[in-house]
Image 1: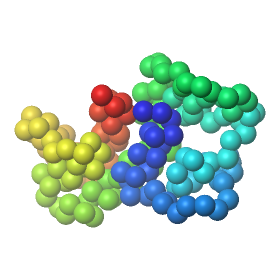
Image 2: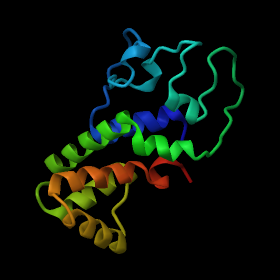
Image 3: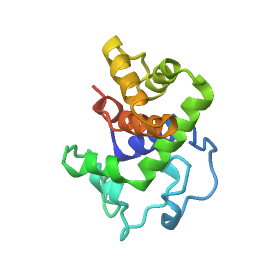
Image 4: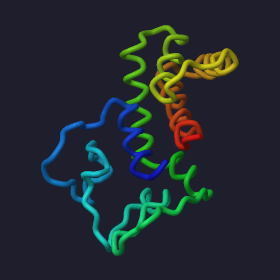
Length: 158
């Protein structure tokens, strides 16, 4: 996926995406806290956000006929360490807990359905339940949701 789609997908899965249309763009200084679609982030030629550059967003100084696609080591590192992605994982976990209830199995199924659009395979469920039971419930759920946001299946379209 493109940088814009990855950002918007993380916001959508977390339940934080602001679906309002129109209005002013979001200034670059507020980008990390902005919950609007990436389309509404203002672009400055001299200030390209790291995520946009890492995920092959075209430079705003010239037109782009076709977007280049690359896979580099910094992309998964960004998804693992970015404050933006970590905050989305926390909100995603809160959404899963709120919508799925207390049962760990229901939480795993809900998280998979929200992030990947499918139910987990039996072996995925077993591994996820083992992971969730290994630590404190809420912290484990945040880490589990963060892991789902880092899966190739979430970031790349087949």
